[in-house]
Length: 242
Image 1 (tube, rainbow, N blue to C red):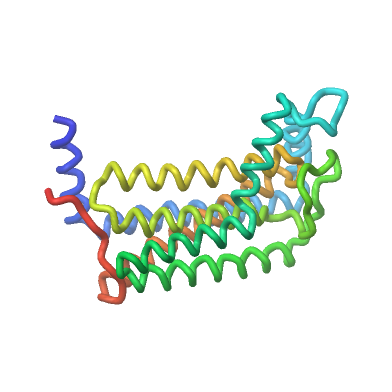
Image 2 (image 1 turned 45 degrees about the horizontal axis):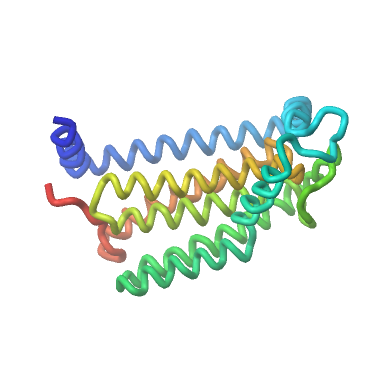
């Protein structure tokens, strides 16, 4: 019975593509509005107390140089934060690009490279514009050289993993597989952001802004990809036979 409902939902979505696009656009606009509100609050200094409290919660009482948890948790934090580093994200983008090449999805490959490349530029410009200092409340568990807001690791992880997740999910026919791919992309994005606060190199609001900005970019990516597909400039999304 559940499978019948799923099939019916897929058929309904195909008949109401514009409504689905409108829903996605609504979510994107809400995310943009939330990001704008967050930027205003950070600029006014209204989030300082919240940022400090959350950062201190992740530190051992009486020793701010020691993150909470056993030694292996701190080691995991370093491993997870590397997933948002330049080397890992570039390598991931190259691997995904080869995937599309092997499937003869040339437009998807070019679109991915353009999305990630423009995302890197956008992240760099945002950091230079806001120029927020890094947290000085606790020692940093990772080397940092750029400004703090928004979190570049969080933003680029969202852009890369969510964009790749969306583009790969489009070429998978099964609904369950699509959901799984997107869930993995979201999980990786969340873990990278949390690790940045845990390592003491970002305020929580830096990470939140990075997530929002990257998420908006990924949703715009999905809408533009669908629009290009409708005009015949990009491969159409794959569906299960139903």
